[in-house]
Image 1 (cartoon, rainbow, N blue to C red):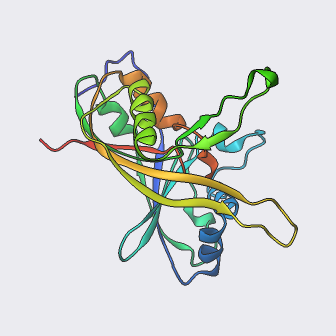
Image 2: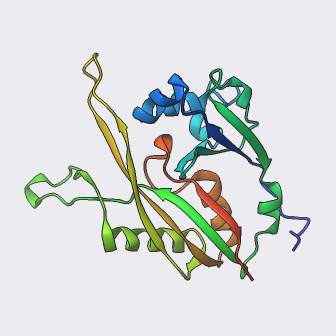
Image 3: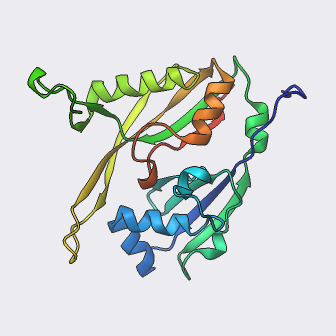
Amino acid sequence: MTTPATTTVPTAMLARIRLNPHSKDVQRDLRDARELHRTMMRLLPPSTDADARQAHGLLFRLETEPHATHIHLQATSTLHPDRLPPHYGHAQTKDLTPMFRALRDGIGVRYRIAANPTKRTSLPPAEKGKRGPVTPLTGAEADQWWLRQATKAGLHLHTLLPTPLPPARRPRGKDNRPQMRHSLIRFDGTATVTDTEALTHAVLTGIGRGKPYGAGLLSLAPAPT
């Protein structure tokens, strides 16, 4: 599979960090989503942008396995794993350009995303002009949310396996900061690419809310033949 010469292939990097469970920095970050966000931002080049995360396309996902915990971190700029705290973990990096080059309409892919499915609750007519609160979705409503998002992102889903994940939290600290909680659901499955341009944009920019706290990173791999 090749991309026409007139098509600009985006560049992005992926880092896979195997966390050291004995690191106090890791233990702190796993308790506090804000601290984890700050640590991941350290891997980016210096930036004067008001929203450096968005400017560098930083997205990440925490994955807990039976014998290890990993962070998958993606950015459109060069990543610098050497800027992690000492003994934080072991990082491997990968260039995602070949993946973007291989994408085209009609191919089959496997996907994974940890998402924050939500909806904005409607307010009564007496409060017209105000925005209702954002509430998390679960069960069939969350599945339908992902189906809609995937369709917009250029995927025709064949299978959809939801797995509830521990929420991203910021506990109330001694400074009396308000607590924060983002619900997370991982969706895995297979799909056919229907819109390569939309899918590329979704991979680079993420999907849904909670991107600074471990939601929205869409990962793709070739579907089994």
